[in-house]
Length: 367
Image 1 (cartoon, rainbow, N blue to C red):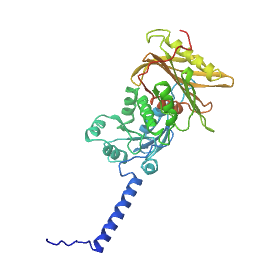
Image 2 (image 1 turned 180 degrees about the vertical axis):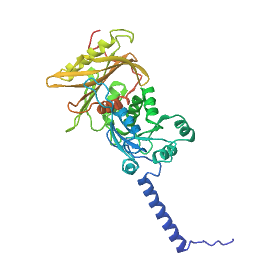
Image 3 (image 1 turned 90 degrees about the vertical axis):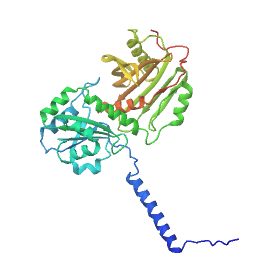
Image 4 (image 1 turned 60 degrees about the vertical axis):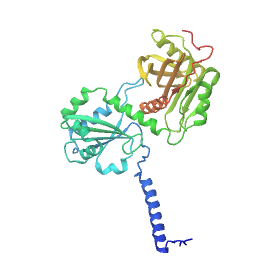
């Protein structure tokens, strides 16, 4: 039988392999820390802050036009409120603001300036050519440098062209806000959530809702009532509730808006110490919520004991034999309300309904 001889690697090749292995491991670690593995960190910063990177010199009218568009007060049930706060900056601040929640790049994107170069890098060739094909235009992108981030590229040859473009599309600000809310849904739970409590609620009620780590949860299972609230020192107070009962009225019934408002007042009397809706500052409209036709009630709640109040938004809809009331409310007398309402809206959009339509034997309000 022929003999074989084992060929053992010499010490030198082994040392080379060891050095290479250590080098590859260090490179992988550094890459992961730097985000070059394709992963993104979560977007940071308040959801009403916008970092505006402008290619134009200080005092250029185009920057002023866009700033005014983003900060123009909108009506709320309490008082007019600016939807965003704008920090004007330039490319020198980009490194430290790269992961900010909302970045806006303004420039004549046909040029070779910094913002224009960013637009060419971020867009496909077709997307870039479409952006610069008109005197003014814009593109919104998501998750560019951070998860939950919104980047808005705004092209403007002149101030007049930009002003006309913004006037032609009144829904542009709402589109930006929708992007920000979608981004909040991606970052809200990065620091943790209350999965065990959420699973218990799902077993008892047949729906799923994600609960952020810093919200307290109250439940009255017999009355099909779940409430979350966030109370932190020196911060706005946020409330979120879900309630359901057997459907009593059709969507076409003209009494439905009055019924849903009365239902909120009834729940407030039971659980909130007597909050009540102020009818003169409350409106109802049909909207789309998660692809379903939904009655939105947006207005002002008040309470005399203790004296307090603020904006609320209720979604009232029917599915699987149930009428659902999803309510969001904010208490922040000295400060802004819209940022907290956006956060609560992001929570609402995590709602998933199961097939069980059994709502229980009775309703709290008689139509």
